[in-house]
Length: 316
Ligand SMILES: NC(=O)c1ccc[n+]([C@@H]2O[C@H](COP(=O)([O-])OP(=O)(O)OC[C@H]3O[C@@H](n4cnc5c(N)ncnc54)[C@H](O)[C@@H]3O)[C@@H](O)[C@H]2O)c1
Image 1 (spheres, protein in one colour):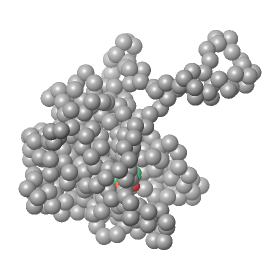
Image 2 (image 1 turned 180 degrees about the vertical axis):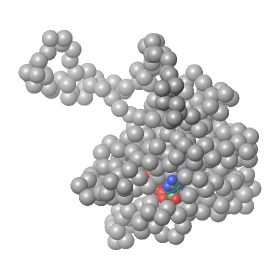
Image 3 (image 1 turned 135 degrees about the vertical axis):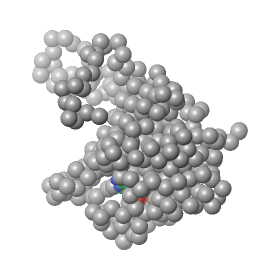
Image 4 (image 1 turned 180 degrees about the horizontal axis):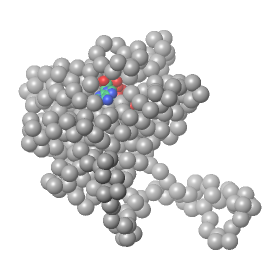
């Protein structure tokens, strides 16, 4: 099979300055396959705990250049609209366009829900979810104008529910819903938006787990971050056959993860007691169907035109 390349395409990978890290692995692969890469990372998060060393976007960009590729570093934070605009502008200024956005920057702090601080809950949402929203919004007009774009949001298996990771999981569930909704909206403009749920031995994992954790040892031995990168790159390629999908890619296993709906029952005059009586039908997975992206198409709904004039002070 012909090698899939990214010549002439510009890719941004947020949160890609760490080593070992998933973002670095994605950036190196895209750079090695011909993409112009913007390697973004804030470097040192003053509020991060137990992180080994410092992330360096410049070091990873230099690694790509040393291997013969094109790359430039960006140091802005994804957590504000202004930071996101600056990241996209870096790509436009350096390479003239933005084709691929990998929303990879993320933080994770394990803590019981009753103990995690207000600030740490908010930080998960700000980096993991809002960061992806701000960067996607900043890239959107460019992608729309050129009638082409690929966005890959990095989610996590935690989106299906993890104890002691409530804020993290909620932010990653949000990233999945963001993926679906942007995919539905991007379809007419040639913008494909998918998600990857990765896994790998990274600074995030080292910072989250105790030094003697069996999971940490397993991750170090079996999950080099590079193993998640082909799925990310595949979904970022112009031949990507899908939009609105979530692909799990950990340790060499590549799977589709999707939401399905059971057949349930349909009875207009149903009561609380009907639900109790027919509960087995509601829950029965037999005949359940994947929720299709077509279900998210709102174009025929007659939505009111958006009017931002009432909130001038908040709107762009
Ligand atoms: N490692 C895993 O097993 C695993 C599993 C599931 C999901 N993920 C996700 O993969 C992504 C990459 O994580 P990783 O494991 O490589 O961790 P990592 O800590 O090595 O990478 C995340 C990077 O994001 C950067 N970052 C943090 N806040 C930022 C901000 N405001 N702006 C820009 N950059 C910022 C950090 O400096 C760091 O370098 C994250 O979204 C993470 O949630 C990782």
